[in-house]
Length: 326
Ligand SMILES: Cc1cc2nc3c(=O)[nH]c(=O)nc-3n(C[C@H](O)[C@H](O)[C@H](O)COP(=O)(O)OP(=O)(O)OC[C@H]3O[C@@H](n4cnc5c(N)ncnc54)[C@H](O)[C@@H]3O)c2cc1C
Ligand code: SF4
Figure (cartoon, rainbow, N blue to C red):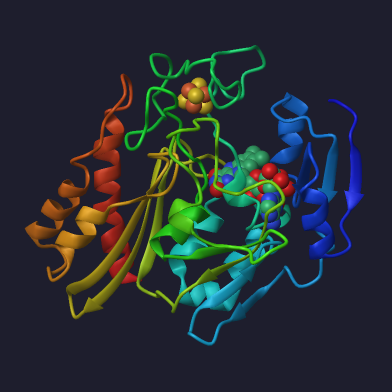
C-alpha cells in the first residue's frame, strides 16, 4: 500500500473543500475503501475522515411523512430505527441482509451505494482486461466467467452488476440521495445514482469529485413492502439476485406496485412495464404473473447466466406475496 496523508474533516464545508483536491478520497466506515487500497484498486494521496462531522448521523421524520437518514448513520442503526423498521420494512430487511453484523456496525448508509463491483476480474491480483479497473483494456467477463453478471443494461464494455442491497430498496421507494458539493448540492434519485456502462464503463456512480452524500430522504412510509435476497449461503454473501417490492393495496387489489431488482444490472433495475401492467389486478391472479413476465422482455442473458432470468422472475412473484403479507 502506498503512503498517504490522513486528514480529519472538522465540518461539512471543510470536508467538501478538501474533497475537491486532486487524488483525494473521503472515508466513512472504511469497510470498502481500505480493501481497495490494500488490493491496489485505488491509491489516493490524501484520505479525508468525515466521521466526526456533526449533523450527518441519525434518522428523523420529515414534514411530508417521510424520513431523512444522515449519510453517516451506521447500517445497523438505520435498520433498527423504529421509523425505518415499521415504516419501510423493505429497507430495513435489505440492510439487515447485507454483509455481517460486525460490518453493519461500522459501515455507513452513505458509503453503501459507493461500493464497487464484486466482478472477480475487477478485484484480481494480476492485471486482467477490465474497463472498470483499467479503462480501455477490455472486459474479461464478457466471454469469461459471467455466471453472476448482468441480465439487463449491459454493454460489451462491462457486464458487471452493482452488488449493494439497500440501494435496491431505496430505488423501489423512490428515495433520493442529498449531496453537498460546496454549491447548491443535488438531489439524486436512488434509481439513477449508480450508472449503466454507457459512455464511461469505468464509472460506478454519478457522484462528482468534491461532492459528498449528506443524507438519504424517503417519501411517506411504505408498510406493505418486502425485500427478498437470493444468495448461495444464507448469511455474509452478496445477492445472486434480489427483489424489493412496495405495494399500495385496496383489499386484495394492487393499486400501485413499485418493484426493483438487485444484482441484475449496474444499478437497481425498476420493472417499469410490470408496474404499469400490474395495477388493478388481484393478488394471486394470472394477470400478475403475466405482468411480471412483461418486465423481463428486455432481459438479455450472457453465456453463463440465463438461469438468473427465471430466478429473478420468481423472486419478484414471491416478494409481491411477502409485501402483501407485511
Ligand atoms: C465482507 C463484506 C461483505 C459485504 N456484504 C455486503 C452485502 O451483502 N450487501 C451490501 O449491500 N453490502 C455489502 N458489503 C458492503 C458494505 O455494506 C459497504 O462496504 C459499506 O456500506 C460501505 O460503507 P463505509 O461507510 O464503510 O464506506 P467506506 O469504505 O468508508 O467508503 C466507501 C466509498 O464511499 C465513499 N464515501 C463514503 N461515505 C461517503 C459520503 N458520505 N459521501 C461521499 N462519498 C462517501 C468513499 O470515498 C469510498 O469511495 C460488504 C462488505 C464487506 C467488506
Ligand atoms: S464486467 Fe466490468 S468489472 Fe468485470 S471485467 Fe468486465 S469491465 Fe471489468
